[in-house]
Length: 418
Image 1 (spheres, rainbow, N blue to C red):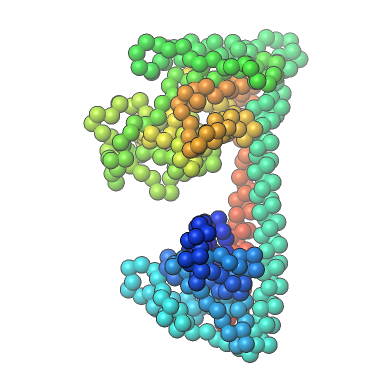
Image 2: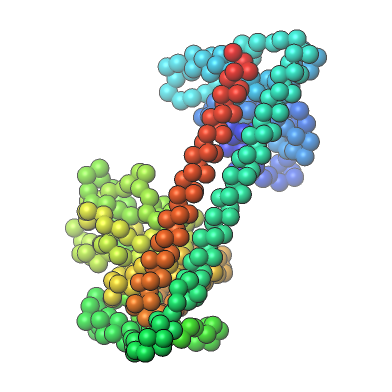
């Protein structure tokens, strides 16, 4: 177990590490027993966890201190709640860390932690009441988490219905009912290909785009056609290597893989670069309506439709930049790419198919995309936006309530140890 396994709520093994049996024998003195209390030594000082039966025999590293309390004097469950919630503990940790360059506490300081110890009978009453309150909170949090999971599934189903022609009435159906003709997806594709050639930004002579491989592609609604990313864009590229050497506090915006979260750009800690003198001009510069796809790293296949940025921006070598030949198609194409059952499913199967997760630009260019008539795309995008707006509102309310539950838990602990 590492320090990352200790959270505000207890023990979580998402960040646990593993050692060989041989190494484990060498470290046998660091094996855990049920009821051991673990305390963070540094970084998030004050986080604590109680070792359950199923974790017995695991090892802990030097960033964690282990306590074995005298159960005849203090209930371990009371102590762990005391550590998490008592103001006296926070004040003490702040005092012993005063002036330190890095948060940390040693064994001697931990043993000096002041603990208010009521009689055992009272301790058990406090623990019983806390567990009753927390049981209710845990149930409420579990319900909220289920709502979040259902919202995620709902979003996936909306996107799937949208890009498969089941969210709004098709243009073909409307045209038949109204007795008129319409531009089919195939005719639209021909217009896009003409626009692509006019906007060609590749190196050298114009290159014909990759066509979709029809083998295995499902049938489409009337009036739709299959295309590829390459056919719908006049440029698919990525940033050049080495730009990381030009980071600056005042340069242009530099979009990295970590800036692309779930279906959106997010800049909590935006990077900037001074554009290298020998850079490839504006080839990898980003403008509104471009589509970005992460092609390497932990965020591989995460995508974003670029909003109005209000400033010049470039992408890193880990991000594929797609410039649509016909900007009006960008929103629908983006919805196709992020649909878990469609574009994202294909990209993930390619990225994780062999060894280290990653996509090549050739794979991004070959991505098959279903193309409906342009008027139908506009209706689909409007309906998707309506559904996603509702989802975002509910998600925000759920997150607010989750934060409220967290605050209530802390307030309950604080009241228990006034």
